[in-house]
Image 1 (cartoon, rainbow, N blue to C red):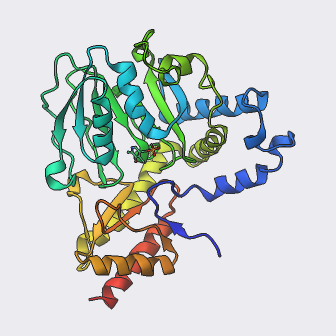
Image 2: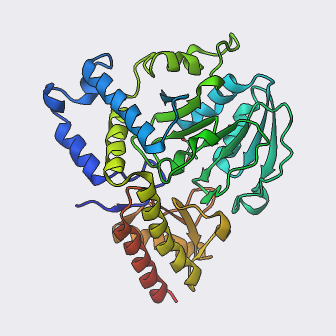
Image 3: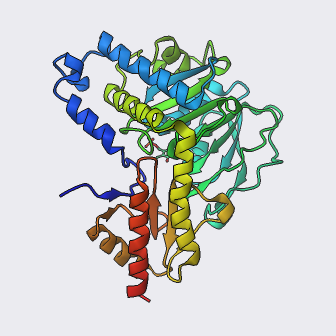
Length: 360
Ligand SMILES: *Cc1c(COP(=O)(O)O)cnc(C)c1O
């Protein structure tokens, strides 16, 4: 069986070119007689891999010199704790709750201080991004937290919140490297890589240097201190070598294909095909307010659970996989990350048209 069009929310589709390159390198990486999985993280060979990966992501995202790029473990979820542990000086933080991942981060932060949800879209099942132009941000809040692209609900901040001068911390897991961003607007911008960049288990945290505390509370584990990882070039302990290597290949693939401007244009074109169809369909409809739509995760429903299940099943048989919506939302969700070709989105829409005719 050949490859399918994989609409999984994560772990998710990776560029075929990258998979082929990794396969070719598997037995003998650059003449060293072993795979990247088998080599010492202290070897020159691996140091080159991580150095190049860092240089390439810096180039792609135009990351200023006063930001550290940290390759950490524990996925995005460990950052939910690491952020308050390192950033809370006044032990106060303000969170914008736009979905399950933001809510989990908010709940975790509550373990470490006085944490307030200054805005939420829970009232309409997280189907929109609230107006964040004038929120009651506290004078002494250590930071303001957002989840920029809500993987489960399919919403995205198209304008960053007005933090009233406070440090902005953003989880970009599911929109990582999908379009250019201005890193200087953030104190920390971070993402688990398994949505749009590489194999699961690695999180890349881009942290402004002045936010990395010299000292933290004695109770903070060594592995949870940004300072330790920053001082040790992300190699205080054995890093996730394999994921760093694959991410490095993906960065090179992105650079070769025009960088993030080109990726944004491609992602907009792909999303337009799907949203245009949904807006005109008699059977399917999108679940997100148009102004808050994500380019990466597109949830939709027929309004009939049985028909939804039939759709997911028949789509799978047609080579369109992982279209079932998140267990908390139901319906369908198509994740159309960087590595999903436009042909995959077109194939999905063609299938939806056919399904609509057959089930009218
Ligand atoms: C998937 C996801 C997470 C959780 O990532 P893990 O690596 O599994 O911890 C957090 N935030 C967002 C936005 C996600 O999409």
